[in-house]
Picture 1 (tube, rainbow, N blue to C red):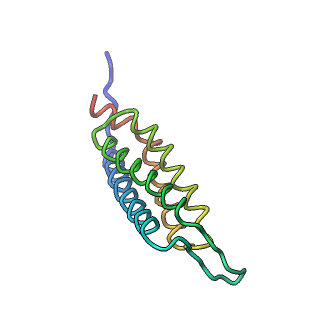
Picture 2: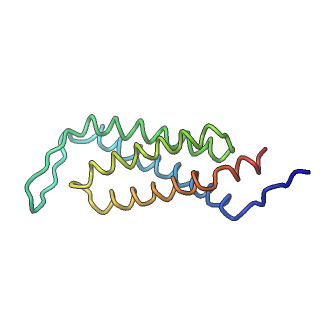
Picture 3: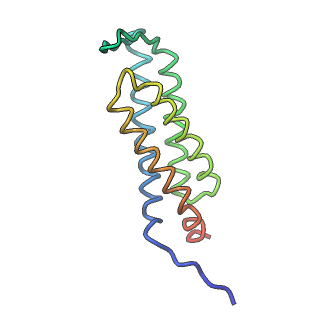
Length: 135
């Protein structure tokens, strides 16, 4: 006799994580297009000094991560098991990219890193429930 594991409300959180992945990817892609189509230099004046960035490389990085986030979010909504693993990897890369951007955009970077951590938690802690609900 097998017991069916009880589903919790975290399945909804995984759907939330998928939607956040899609939105985060769309925001990253938008930032990438602005970086690629705009000026080639970004600067931020802080108390420690002046930070200069060549934003072409950063724009390509954000475009690739953004597209991967959107595709992974769509796959996660469909319940694909592989999407959970890929989502954790891509969200981790997104958080690392934002970590490098803290000197230029501290509030935005910290907010995105926090959301990325919440997404990773939802997927790792309760991802199996989604697979069991779909399977």
